[in-house]
Structures are given as structure tokens and as C-alpha cells.
Image 1: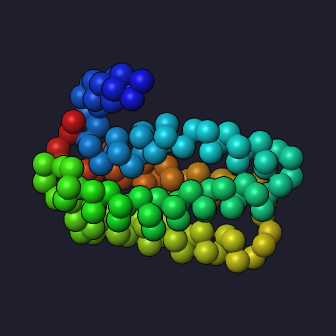
Image 2 (image 1 turned 180 degrees about the horizontal axis):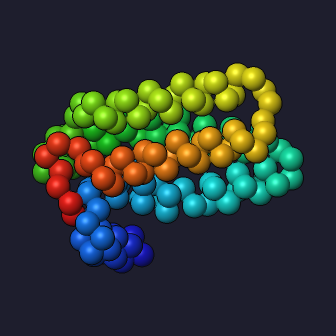
Length: 141
């Protein structure tokens, strides 16, 4: 299934002129976290916002603190070239904005519809930025 997904995403990326960064940051992350999104939406509909937020932030923390370093270490054994944790400045800026936003939103302990709209707007700005201005050295698909 994953091979079929990767092939179809590569063809779609070429067709729509998507950069590899856009595909990795937006498309793959949305599809890969679909099950978590479903559970978080279900919890939010049942007025369990604490559970919904903890699912979202827990998943992001797991990727940042475990998966990224583990993949770097595995790349020395399995991969053709070793990976590094050196990110381009735009990615660092996006992570910093996302971290500050998540901190502000979770520190109050309250929520409203416009906070969710703000989060969706920030994600859309990140997606548009990655689509229109790909990282240096990464042309369209």
C-alpha cells in the first residue's frame, strides 16, 4: 500500500508542480496522521478538548523527539547517504512559530472556535509558503 501511495504522490507532485518539501511537510503528514486526526476530531466533538489537544501535541512531540533522531541514526546503517539534523532556515522558523503558537494556546486552558481557525490559518500559510517558495536547491517535483 505504501508503494502505491508513494508512486501516486510522486505523479501528483510532478503534475501540480509541488516541491519535495511541500509533499513531505504537508501531503505525507496529513495522510500519515489521518487516524490520529479522526480520533482527535471525535474527542473534540464529545467535548474532550483536553484529549484532543494531547493527541495532537503528543504526536508532534513523538516525531520531533524520537522519530527524527532515530531516522538520522538509522541512515548511517541503512541509507545510501547519512542524514543530518541540519534544517534550512525556513523550516526552523516554521517550527519556532508552531511551538510558540502551541504554547500560547495550551497555556490558557481555554478554547474557542477562532483559536481553531487561527491554527488552520497558520497551517495554510505554511502550506502556501512551501508550495510557492520551495527551499533553496529544491525545485518543483
